[in-house]
Amino acid sequence: MSGEDGSVITLPEVIVVGDPDRSPMTVADWFAEGFYVGWNLQNGTPEAPAFLNGPFLQAYLDGASAAQGKRADFDQFQGPAIGPDVGGVPLEEFERGFREALDELFRQEDKHIESEPEIEIVPGPGVL
Image 1 (cartoon, helix red, strand yellow):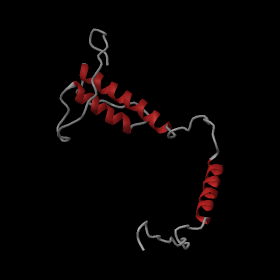
Image 2: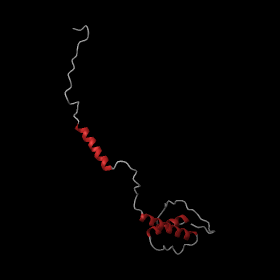
Image 3: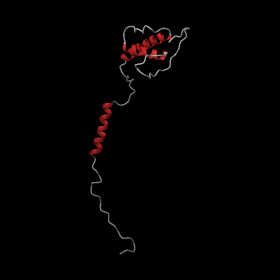
Image 4: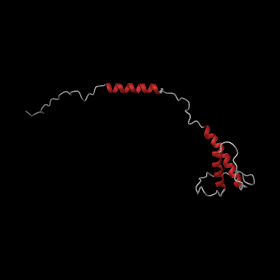
């Protein structure tokens, strides 16, 4: 947003809190109002209310143009992209090897079920 002397004013991130039935009062309010209109009006030039002038009008128009640019970026966004292949084993091959390893594991007989050898207890020395 440009100031009256041509300097650039950077507005902080605005969190809009308040009564939606009340008219905007500050420069940040008018920027938010313009942003709302610009987001919903994708093509064309937004019309500011007739009574706005000075920094309020500029904030409204800056908000509208900022929103139109962001809306265009948003509409063109295709979602996250998957980067280049980092190498390694293909998923299908890994799954096949994993299944084979599990099959091998479950094919082994459970050794704890088999009968264990009998242990003969021998009396110690001096015991008859």
